[in-house]
Image 1 (cartoon, rainbow, N blue to C red):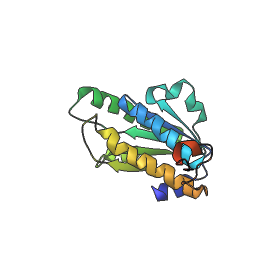
Image 2 (cartoon, rainbow, N blue to C red; image 1 turned 180 degrees about the vertical axis):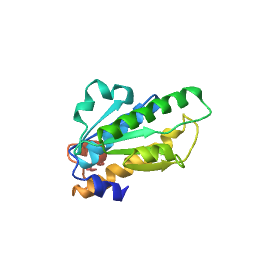
Image 3 (cartoon, rainbow, N blue to C red; image 1 turned 90 degrees about the vertical axis):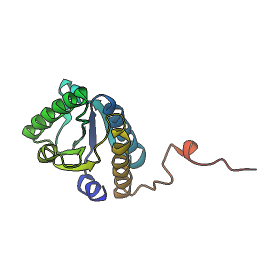
Image 4 (cartoon, helix red, strand yellow; image 1 turned 45 degrees about the vertical axis):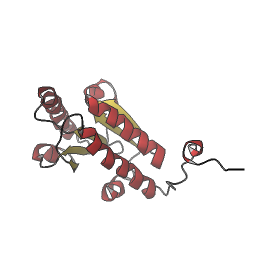
Length: 165
């Protein structure tokens, strides 16, 4: 994640995309990036990208796409197939994409600029595996931007213990 942060440190904004349960993780990843590094990011449902946010996709606005799948669930496979099609479209458009995908998923890896592997698991446990690289990316982006992650601005009341008198 440190190498990815170094590679993407000049991006002005990130769009985080996920479907179903992974949409919440996309929003969480975007929130962590904003809180930690002060880089603008937004989480969107992957199916909504072409309804406006697609106009923002450029060299300076890469995508972070959650593209994992639980092959034992038909709904997860359908979600995954739609996400792969979106990745194909974004590749044709020239988008820079960081994808989170199941370990060994060569299809997603071939469509993304960069691919982060997470262990395969149940649809409802995949977010546990996805959240760690998203948080680590935010952490390393903060370091790339010279942000003191132990003293985030405007969040001090939430993260600093009250002084005892």
